[in-house]
Length: 415
Image 1 (cartoon, rainbow, N blue to C red):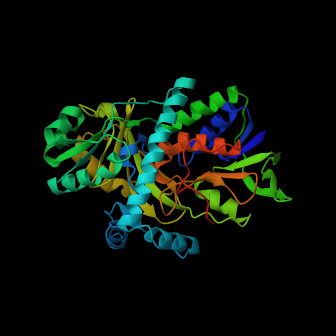
Image 2: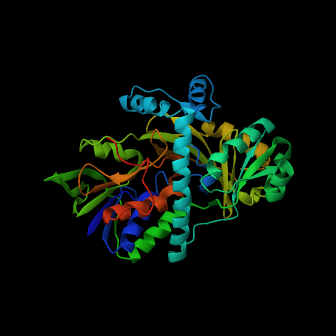
Image 3: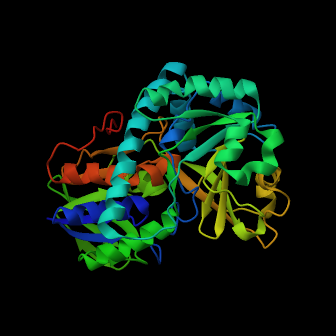
């Protein structure tokens, strides 16, 4: 079967790889000049089942409301005259009860654990490098009260088979001496020893090269303009460089998936949530962190990547712009310097902002579309890197008319 994958981010390229493994002929189309040039370019880098909590929680509405007056909230709401934004926001708020948050977190944790195992298989099969690092991830807290609440909440993840160890302040520093300067700001933490990290951009580009070696037709600098439907099936993708026919199509366009889907009268509840990242030189620090982690009270993630250190923060519900200025990163950098010292960024800072394709539940859509030969693999939110290889395997199973190797409960299209 000839399968056309729409999108060459980490979701599209991992999907292409799994389809190639199954013996399909694969064409991948993307408007970028290299794979993973949009959302996957400079994301957090954490492969983090230990951070699989749903963003829709009882705390989220308060953060969104306070963000209208303050710029230091982890979730920021920037209202727009956008029907799409307000529809999504209403659906997101409906997921913010304790009951819905727990249910979404359980499904998300199972998916993330499965997807991490699939990532490990892909790396073993291909041998590709991506500044990957094992050894776990640390989630630390600045007050004993927050640590106590987090340890109790972690029982949700533990019930799904994930190991999370509670650590004292001294045990956190012993686990990662790179946090020693922050000793006075750390009350303790949780260690997820099976979590990992790596550069999603490097991984995706290397896997794309591998896919081409397996016979994939990778068409970059090619804008997807529409899909042609005849007799209830998609027959071709119409692009800036011509028509691309296929037997089956997989939609992996992230925040732009709803725009293409709505031309087929398919409603996808996906809206961009903007995140900010900075990348600095690890050598600026006397003792760089040995493993990645999260300053949980500020939702500031950090990730060592070879000779670099990636920092990410903020969830901004405010539209499709990726524009940014140095002032947008001031709070993030100040909090990072509280942890790692004032030398952080001394050799320079690379700024970036990207758009996470979020659904109200925080779960991706991995399913057949209402059109028979169109499949959906989109809406992975802030954990696309963690989820990517598992969702790719699931959608390849669906394309091949097999039961998915992992349940797509909570990930089915309901439009």
